[in-house]
Length: 260
Image (tube, rainbow, N blue to C red; front, side):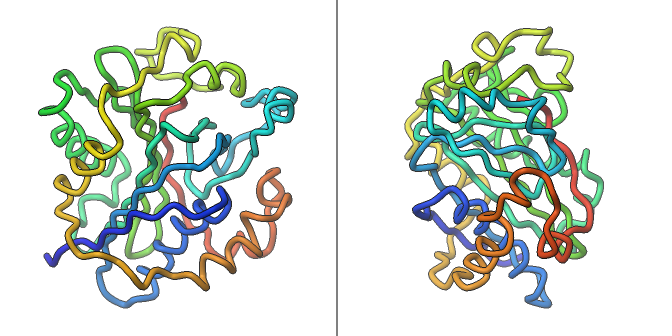
């Protein structure tokens, strides 16, 4: 198994950043060989990102998002809505089924990825645990939510890592999720989430070490990212939940993530 590619890149807009995650998956699918990548980025401004099948009106406080000028976009993976922004590190992994056939089962994919992330963070923050379907938590406080998008030969596994995020923004932007992991016990967002007591640089180093992502990726798929913005992520038909023609060309199946 060769070295994993590494891309630390935040693009100017949330739509471009979401599109790049998908572009890296599509690039791997078109390569004809296993192509694995770790990407990290951090939203330049607060944004709500809803799951592929999320019902916006039931999951977010629309008026509050408008008043706060928080954009609402849709991702290609499952799960419920999240709020991200400065102080929330985002990561994306493109992994090969040919190299890791066990990951075709979504439960195994969650256990594998989150187990490796927990092991990488444990030396810095004792007590990191995998909770629910796809959360990482410190005891009963969630700091990471994750979701997966499956294609024929690769999967995209991506998620959040809170470290210096204004947690009160989550309650202002999000309603209580329609599905909750048992360990949440009905707690509101402010009583359920927490920031990691780490810097973004420490988290980045832990991610790189966890995946041995040592091959810098300079030639990332710029043109494909731009096409996905134009045809999908920049269009209200996609973000508001009305499938647009371009969206159908990339859909196969998607796993789920635990709600925020």
